[in-house]
Amino acid sequence: MLLPRHEIRGNTNLRAITKPELKAPFVSIVILNYNGLRFVKKCLESALKTDYDNFEVIFIDNASTDGSFEYVQKEFSHDHRLKIIRNQKNMGFAEGNNIGAETANGNYIAFLNIDTIVASSWLRELVNVMEADPKAGVCQSKLLSLKRPKFFDSAGDFIDRYGAMMRRGGDFMEKDVGQYDKMEEIFSARGAAMITRRKIIKEVGLFDPTYFATYEDIDFCWRTRLRGYKVLFVPNSVAYHVGGVSSPTSFKTFFTTRNWIMTLTKNYELHNLVRFLPFVIAISASVVAAELILRRRPKLALDRFKGVLWNALNFRYVWEKRLWIQRCIRKVPDSEIMKHMLKTNLAISHWLPLWQKMGVSD
Image 1 (cartoon, rainbow, N blue to C red):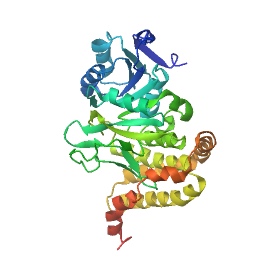
Image 2: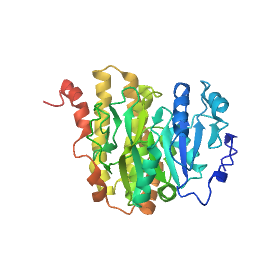
Image 3: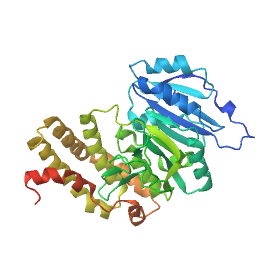
Image 4: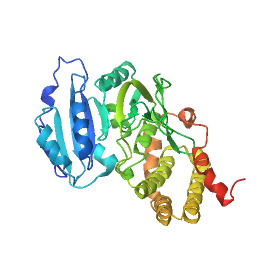
C-alpha cells in the first residue's frame, strides 16, 4: 500500500474517465518534480494540452522546498485528469517514478521530466507505434534542447560493450537536419520522455530503486531487451528538454560510477561480465588517479572511488539482483543484445587525453 508512505492530494477518482467506448488506450503520464518551480508551469500546461483523448497525469513531488508543490496544488488541482502525490522525502529519480507507476491506471505508462515541454502530438505518436508493434517494449521521443530548439538533447541513448553511455545527437549538440528522422532501434530510451507497457513492468520490474539517479533507464531498457522486446526511437514524437539542472558534479560522479558497475554486473552473462567488468574497474581506478594528480580534485576522486567501493561492499546484494534477472527475466542471449551496442570504446576516447598527460599512452 502506498497511502501510509505518501500524502495523496487532488482528484483521485481517475478511473471514471476511462470509458469502455473509448478506442484510445488509457495512458498514465508520470511527471517527477524536485524543486522544479521554474519549469513546472510550462511542463504541466504542455502535458495537459496533449492531443490525445484518454490519459491521466500523475505529478510526483519529491519533498520539494521551493514552493513548486504548493504552486501545482493552487494552479492545477482543479483538472480532473491530474493526480498529485507528495513524497515525505526525496526518493530519487528511480523510486520517485516508481511511485507514480505504482499508482497509475494506464495500459501504457509514459515518463516525463519536469524540465520538458512536449509537442501536442508527442503521446499519440508513441502510442501509435506501441499499438502497431507488440514487440515494442519501450519508445523514446525525439528530445530537442529547450534552450536551443534546433539542436538535439537525445535521439536515443547507446552504450558500448563496457557500459559507457552516450546520447546520440546530444553529446555533441548536433543540429537537427533530419539525420535521425527514421524510426529505429536504440539501445536505451531516455527517461526524460519515454513510454512503456504495463505488462513490461510486470515482467521485468520497475526502475531499480537502489540507483536513485543515473543509469536507471539504461538498466530498465536492458532488462526489457533481455525479455525479448525492442527499444525504439520515435522521431515524430517531439519533446524539448533542459537537462542537467538539478545534480551537482560530485553527486553525478558517485552515482554514475556505482550504477555503471552495478548495471554490468546484473545484466551480462557471466562470460561477458568477466570479460568487460575488470576493464571498467581499471578505468575507474585510473580516473581516480587522474583526478587526484592532474586535475587536483580530491572530492571527485573520492566520490568515484566510493562508487567502486560500494559495489565491493554490497556484492552479495547486487549478485542476488543479478540472479533474479538471469533466472527470471532473461530470454535473449547477449549475442542479440550486443548487436545494439556501440563497438567503439567510449571510456577510452573520453579519458585518453588525461592518460596521455600521465604517460599511460603514447
